[in-house]
Image (tube, rainbow, N blue to C red; front, side, top):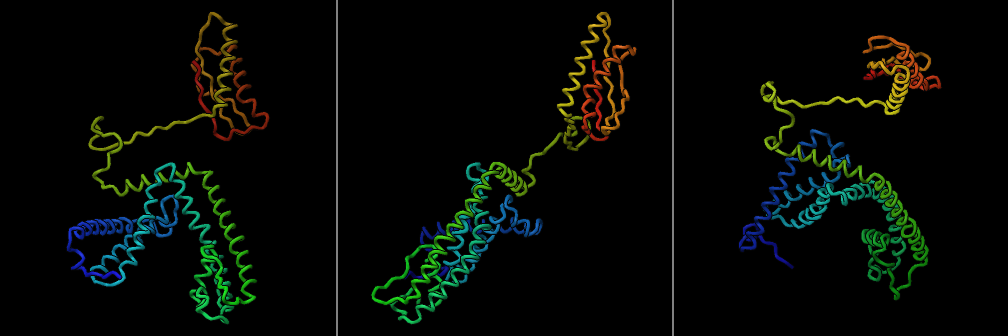
Length: 364
């Protein structure tokens, strides 16, 4: 048995002082974690902050619990209260589990953190409810069956708490069925244990494996999108935690253009037209240029193909909007008819391009 030293006796040797430095660093980190996490909870809301998987949801619970247990351990150390190893051991487990949060930025490991979260908080939670009902039922049955035997002969079911834990171990196949060949086991034990083995080991464990396999398949289908979403969420989180004076300025300074000490962002408005409609326009212009060149070799005029407002299939308006030609020759009218047939012809087949969908096409 080891002796528990007081706070004054725990820091005497050189190794104790080195440990003290590590403990101070750990306590400082725990305080910083709480100062950063608690304001975000009030700003975003607890349900959204802990419920969004992409934002790290369950890992925030682990990190906050780790920091709280570190502070509890410190208080117990300073007050010389026995039992500080309990929160310390839990803090060590949670601290190492929280390391998985920082693997989200890696494409190879990021999707697996999502899988673990979904399996633990989805499949495992549902499975635990079923497992609890099965264990409670069969543990009570085993405890009642062994009431007629000497408790010292079969210690696994001597009292009800021990029977619960032994049934849990049997459920996970950690231990085998209790067997003491010097004691005659009750007949009902064989029947009850056979039913328990079929339901627990063969049915429920394989059901749980199938549930996890389905979750793995669903996450694997969108693993790339999940990884990119995690990278973006982590980047935004780091930018929010970073002090203001470390933020790089975005945009263009107004001094360069005589606009004063103001910063501007450049915004480009780009309209992408329907590629199939553009191809029809190009083919129409090629046909009209070819006919104009065959009929009038001596005349070289630049013309503008005028746009029409396309309404529904039953209403097609042909209104020229812009023209750069100096004369309205028969060839230009023929070119317009070809343009109309190529571009507006599909409307007669029932195609509806929508109201107010018109473009201005210039031909030089």
